[in-house]
Image (cartoon, rainbow, N blue to C red; front, side, top):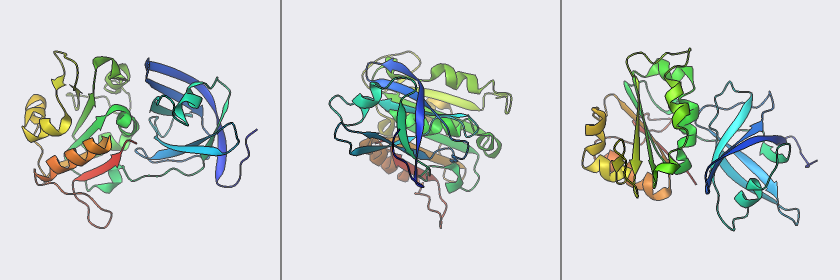
Length: 258
C-alpha cells in the first residue's frame, strides 16, 4: 500500500485505452467523497524506484456523476511519469490528492448564448467533462467543440462526442452541439487544415461553423499547448474578447494542457 494522509489518497487503475502509440486514456476508481467541478484537474502521483514521488496534473474527462475518474494522456518517451503509468496493470495503485484544482470552468462566465471550447491534443479532456454536465446545456444555446491535432488518428473520443447528442438529460434537439476537427499534418474532407489560431485570424473557423464570435454573447474556453493557448488568446483579443476573471467576468478562460 502507498502511504496516505489527510491530503492524499489512492485510487486503483480500472482500465486503459490506447488511441495511438502515443495517446492513452485511463480510468481510476473514485472515492465517493472526491468532488470536482467539470473543467478542473486532479493531481496524480507515482513513486520512482527510489521511492520519491512524481506528481502530474491531469484534467478530468469523466462526468461529475461518474463513479470513476477518467483521464487522457500523451506518453512521453523517457519521461518520469507516463512510461511508468503506461506499465501499470488493472488493480495497481496511483496516488491522488483529495482536492481538485483549476479555474477552467463555466462559472468563470456570465451566461451567454454560445460556448466555444477550443482544444489541441489532450487539452480535449476538460471539455469532455464540461459537455457531460447538464448545467452546460442549460446555460448555453450553442456548444462548439474544436479539436486540433496533427493527424486523423489522434482525433480521440469521436464516438463519445457523437453520443452526447443522444444523452437523455438534454437530447440535442436542433443540433446544438457542433464539432470541428482541425488537422495540422493530415487531410480529411471533414476537417479544417492548419492551426486553430490561424483559422481564427482568417475567419475560416467561424465560416465553417456558420457562427460568429461576438463578445456580447460568445464565451470561449481554450486548453492545449502553451503556444496554442498564447496564440489563440491573442486571436480572440483581436476579436474584442477579454480574459475573464472572478472579479471581472468577460469572455475567455484559458489553461495550458501541460
